[in-house]
Image (cartoon, rainbow, N blue to C red; front, side, top):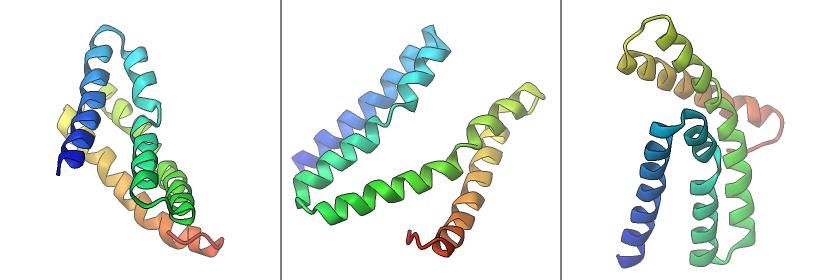
Length: 116
């Protein structure tokens, strides 16, 4: 339970740091947010917990394929905000498109032999 609390606290600190940095510089906050820190921590913890190279390789590869359908959200949300849509609606739309793209990614990846 302590290990879980440490992991949660560290992940939360990363998110809080991004928010604080972005207040001063949106570009710097975006740079920190774009770093795969949570993914790297996840891989470190998965390795520490299992020591299973095949599981870690599968996890890292699946992360790559799931990052791709999430990228359009980072263009949709700002476009909607710039066109006057309220933040929460823009975020909801971006998340909705991302979910649809996630669902589409699974069968498309399967056609190319990638199991997610």
